[in-house]
Amino acid sequence: MKKLILFLLLLLSLAGFAKKACANQYDEIYNRLPILDIYYDDSQDPAELEDYSDYVQSPYPLIRTSAILTSQKTKIKPGYYLLTPRTKGAYEFITFKQNGKIIAFVPIYEKTIIDPKVIYLEAPKPKPHLITWPYRILKKGFLKLFGKYKRPLKAPPYVIESEFVDHGKYFEIKFYLEQYLYKMLFKVEKEKLN
Image (cartoon, rainbow, N blue to C red; front, top):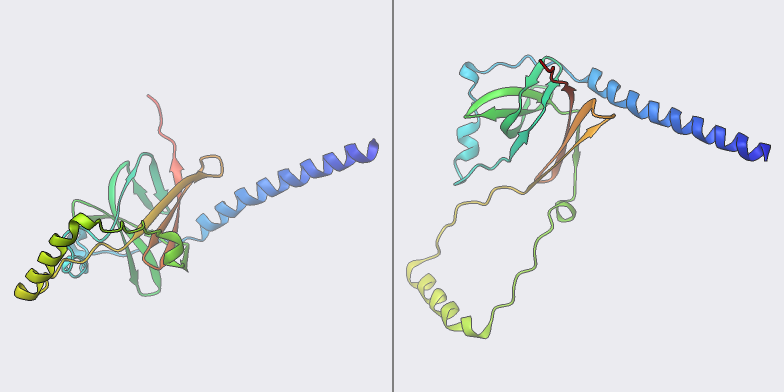
């Protein structure tokens, strides 16, 4: 009986130690984030026209934040932001844009290559019905007559996952874009009640 109680006490102390080590992990990651001193004229992204030249809609996702997030010196207020990954010098960062203007530069603490087939699952294509064969023949005839229609490019595939970590002290965003995973970490600022 004494051995069982001793074992349970040891197990509980190890669980508490692991929980504290995980919390210290986020503090360490946040404190190692670089402070980005990057400035653009009038907060305009110089690569924006190049990014949008082949697309009808934005090739980057829109995210909504509902808490005040801070990343080193940068404060992001609640609202809608367009996320665009950028590289300048040795820094990898994500720009948060609102109404075409850069609001914040957020450093990436981890960038990894992923397998797109695993992350972006495609829906199976429906089988054509027998009744649609006359329309398919007509379409092929028009394609031969007038040439193939050049469709605008589809936006690259992306997935955004976010969660509060370390009991709501930090907010982590996992941003999957094409073949990369970008991870960002923010400190959550608590709103003061009047």
